[in-house]
Image (tube, rainbow, N blue to C red; front, side, top):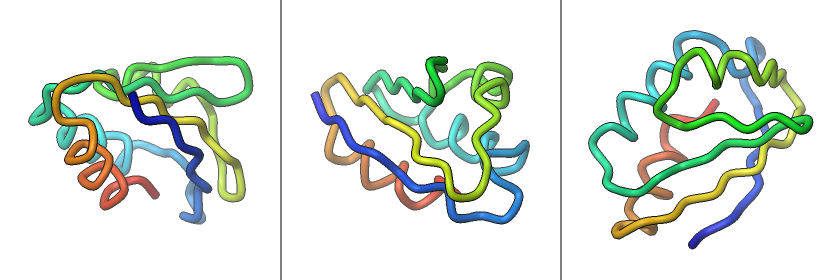
Amino acid sequence: MIKFQHLIEAEEGLHARPVADVAYTLNKCSSDVQITFNGKTASGRDLMEMLGLNANKGDLIDVLIVGGNEEETKEALLKVLP
C-alpha cells in the first residue's frame, strides 16, 4: 500500500482531460487507486467519480494505491496528474 498527497497544479484543476488521462493510465495497471478530496473518494478508473471531487488548482488530493505493481502505478500516475 502506498499513500501520498498530490498538489493540483493545473489552472483547470482536476477537469475532463487529465481525468481521462488518469483513467486511461490506470486501466493499464493492476493496482487499485482511490483518490480522496474534501471527504469524497473516487476510483482512479471512474471518470465521473473523479470529476465529482471538484478539485481545483492549489488543492491537495490524497491518493491510495493498493495492488501488485504499486510503485510502477505511482510513477505512471504522477506523470498524468495535473
